[in-house]
Image (cartoon, rainbow, N blue to C red; front, side, top):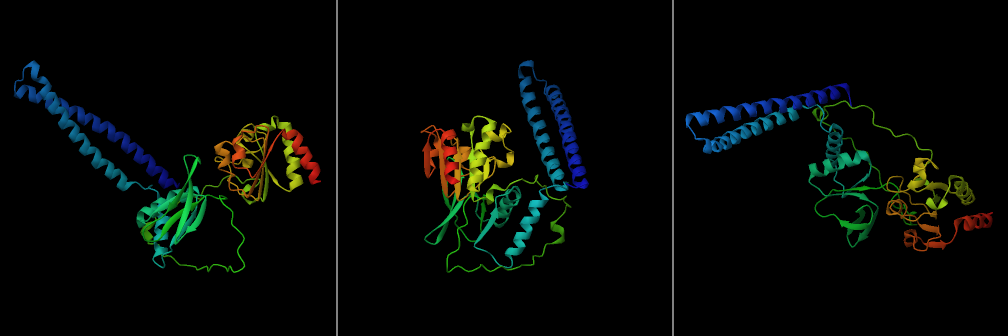
Length: 336
């Protein structure tokens, strides 16, 4: 945020704090004056004093509410910081729609899109479905699939009403299949959107950039992932040898990364990366839902676990029940 924006926010906070103090003092004064005035004018006996208190309190609260409403609106109207980035993207998209309205507008489910996509949907009065992991066609409609309740269930959503329909997709949530023999490149059209000068009232700083990851697991075709079943940090080397033999990237579930055995950019799951490789080998991973949502889009899942009831086997295409310290060396030897 610019210095102007920071100073504006500080002014707004100071204004709001002083507003509460002033309104509180006025509320007390109005209450006291009315209470004393009513009891003296009407010469109320001690048993009827509560009537004066109710009247004075009600009037004081009404005055406070009125002042609060007026001052809140004034503060909002003069605030220099009010979702300017989201507003800019919404205005830009509206300008583009003036040239041609698409049937479906797709966004990556990023932090930025979560900010401006709902604003755009509200401005256009059009439906929005977020965090999708798949899409399919049913008759003439597109059906979008999105996880719910932390990935425990998946919902199929069909958007209704006039276009455009707004949709955000998770990165790496599903595979981009190879185009068919009759496929042709989609046309790309450049559109010059005109933005009104008054639509942007803030000069933002450069966007936040996360630390560059050592590896982008979303681009890997093969992944070998390790979980608690690896037992000790020194055993990670065994999984690394299997990954090298398969030409795969090494990944892990959250407990392994939390323990520092592998860097955090190797984590797969709801709090890590979402991947969809051609081959996903899970070594000693029980299959918590937080991990499953990050890899269930893989084309082929191979799970190795000594617990035959481990949830990972419910999503695995191939399962091996046994000791990974016996099975993995045999696999490496066979691959050689």
